[in-house]
Amino acid sequence: MRKMLLIIPAVALLSGGGAIALSRDTAPEPVRAVGEPKSCVTISQIRSTKVIDSRNIDFRMAGGKTYRNTLPQSCPGLKFEERFSYRSSINQLCSVDIVHVLHDQGGRLYEGAGCGLGTFQMVEKVSVK
Image (cartoon, rainbow, N blue to C red; front, side, top):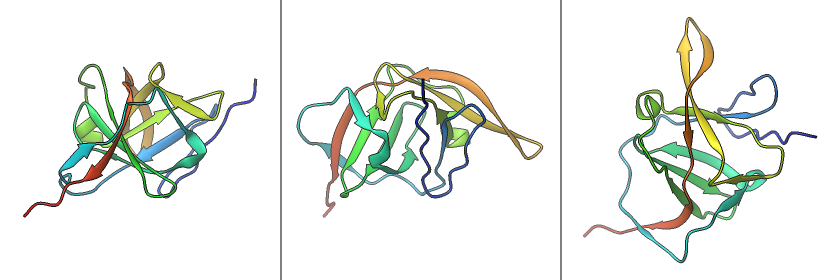
């Protein structure tokens, strides 16, 4: 079976096929949910990711939409490391998939805790007045 690989800015590939999502941004902006949650997003449409905290990851998509994935449980080390990997044999990342926190040890990345994804909820920025 052929594995799909994703390359986004500031991303390196793991051996065996997969992608690493890196994020080193500032505090999250307030958002509100739009529409119904989705079980999957198309990997080739993901442009960047942002780890919000130990349970939330934003996936910025082609066309400017953002989907927030709220993990069912806290993922140890996710917020501290702010990077993760995933593998998929199809061009979709789904709520049944697992992300692995990536740790840096002596300049080498290794996979840590594996954490299940939740559904993908489209969100939009809320203007604060």
